[in-house]
Length: 233
Image: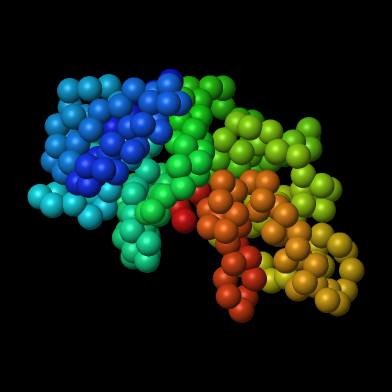
């Protein structure tokens, strides 16, 4: 279990988060401003930070920037619905993930578990590069035909596997449904959009914590799909 810092200026939210996390067996410490969060980090050994964006005195983005100068621990931002600019800025500054308020406790805990698995496995044996592709927490081992997400195995159909492999071979490149269909099915892409969309949806359900808000396989409207790293979305 981990020691987790909760930083939010809304005390009711802090109290709720403490209940959820401590019920999972974690210990918690709290702060109500960005400056307080930095003070806590200086004196306590913390494995993960839940950090609100909008706070007085020092907001979450400024605190995150200062935090990243000293610490590599995972940070999950707490953002209000519609604060898309803050989400992107936070991820660029160094956040590992974000949860939108009002948050679903099940999703929040899943994101905490995901980040902790990745953080605590950093000292593990390096992944061999030949015939293996890794993007964020996704790992595809083509020798064993095996896919894991943050260390957890995922069972894919052959078609889902080939779509994911194609995307992982082309990270950050937008692939049109016609291009995906042509390379995976090896046929002329007639009616490709609908079929590819169905398989992408099923794939997201298996590799994404929240398929409705994907971190990896994202849609670029009017163009197709792109695979992005979970840290860089």
